[in-house]
Image 1 (cartoon, rainbow, N blue to C red):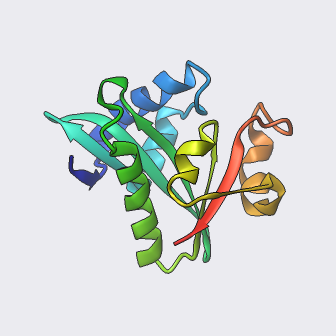
Image 2 (cartoon, helix red, strand yellow):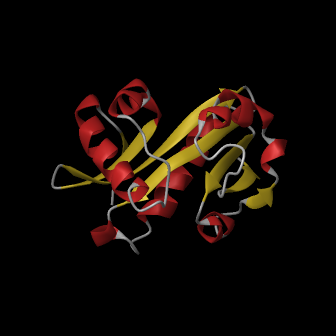
Length: 150
């Protein structure tokens, strides 16, 4: 397993992977244009040139970034790719002197095993007012907010 920064050519596969889980209600969908715009935020794992896992570090402020769009193709789950992608995001945040990373997820136990702790979404006002208010689930989000230091 090699984790690498995504390239522009990866965007369609990242989009397809994320939305395959969104179609099942397991994560929020992303538009292809959003993936292209944020391609520098993504890490990927490839197998034979095909993207089989992805994760994203989105910066909000000098001290805060979000780990989002962590997705591992069903055929590749159980191989530590998801935790490796989260670790790569945390390392990049640390390298950028960002002191905290958070996530919103329907799989809190995965992130809790990686050192995240649950918090009230209202403790993340930059996220709520930058993006959440536009989400169809707002204000009744069913995702769990978690945070950890880098």
